[in-house]
Amino acid sequence: MLKSMTGFGRGSYEDADFSVNIEMKTVNHRYNEVAIRLPRFLNPLEDKIRKTILKTVSRGRIDVFITADYNVSGNCTLKVDKNLAAAYHKALQEVGIAIGADAAGINAAAEILYLSKCPDVINVKEGFFDVESVWPKVEQAVEQAVANLVAMRETEGGNIYGDFIYRADLIAEKLAQIEERSPLVVEEYQAKLQ
Image (cartoon, rainbow, N blue to C red; front, side, top):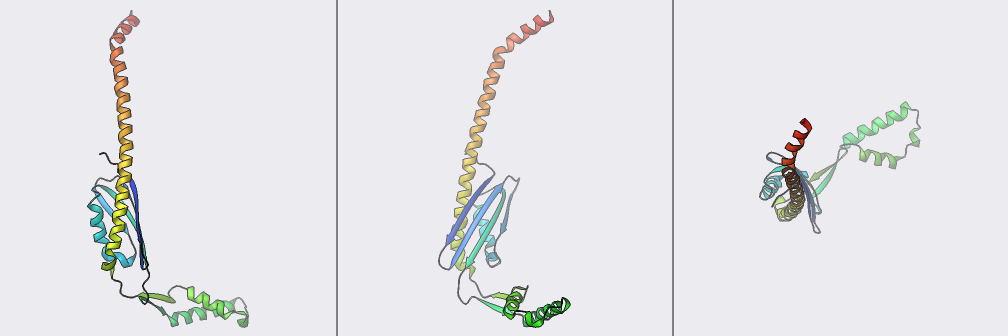
């Protein structure tokens, strides 16, 4: 069966503790190239994901976009950089002095909220995450996305095949008309010359 080089597929998996969404698209390419964008905590699975895709898709550029989320309590901690927060606080006071703002007019709760949003004041430290335990779930989503991708490529290939046959029949029809008229062309040309 004729398959198109372009296609799109989506797959997902979700349970109480883990969810993953995978989207992949293919375009025409001379070789077989897989580009995967995935969350950092799934990096150890990149090679397995690539091999799973390449078992089925043998040509083209494949862009894979993976989003995932896990909900495991106690797996991450927050760390506050107190020195950086104090430096931001001091800088805010200097800005207030520079514009002549009254120090008593600064809302402490608003300042705390602002400081918590400043870059690197609060950092998330992830604990150990066992990616091998989620591999079967990710693999299921990858296989679903690949199956949807292949189905779309086959559908598009069928459309291309139908268009190809239509155009080939049209060419054959025009060729038959030309062959039918070809003996008359010589006679018409001789008549014009005379």
